[in-house]
Structures are given as structure tokens and as C-alpha cells.
Image 1 (tube, rainbow, N blue to C red):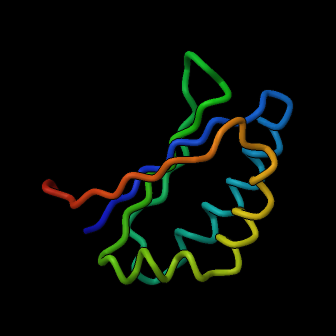
Image 2: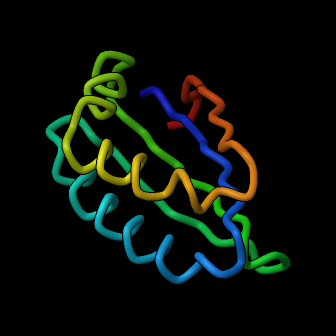
Length: 96
């Protein structure tokens, strides 16, 4: 399993819109054939900080996610709402 975490810092005035469009991305991402998990987390100490946890069976499956309409719509929509560029960190799952 391949996991990517994406940290996103959103401008305060765009938090609600970010949550709404991210929820749509989540609902479509979990329908992808090789998606194992797609979580959206919001910091309890700073409501403008989010962590996306994306797990796919293979690196190719994770790459295929980035070609989907729902991902590209999300990426283009949220870009102006970012307080700073988002950062993604890839991982290989040890357990499970």
C-alpha cells in the first residue's frame, strides 16, 4: 500500500468552501477501484490546517488518482484558497 499525506494551510475566509469541495473529492476518491482510504483531517488547534491521508494499493493507482476529473477539479478550485503551497509526503505502509 502506498500512502501520501498532504498538508494544506487554507486562508481563514475559505475554510468552509475548502471543506465542501474536499468532501466532494473524498466521496469520489473512495469510489476509485484501488483506493484503500481517503481521509480529510482538520487541526484542532488551527482550523485552517488540514491533513489529507490518501492510501492506494500501488504507486500507479495513486498516480491514476491525479488524472481523475474530481481530483483536478479539487486542485484547481482550492489553489487560490491556499495560504501557502500544499506539501505532499509519500510513504510505504508497514502495518497494515
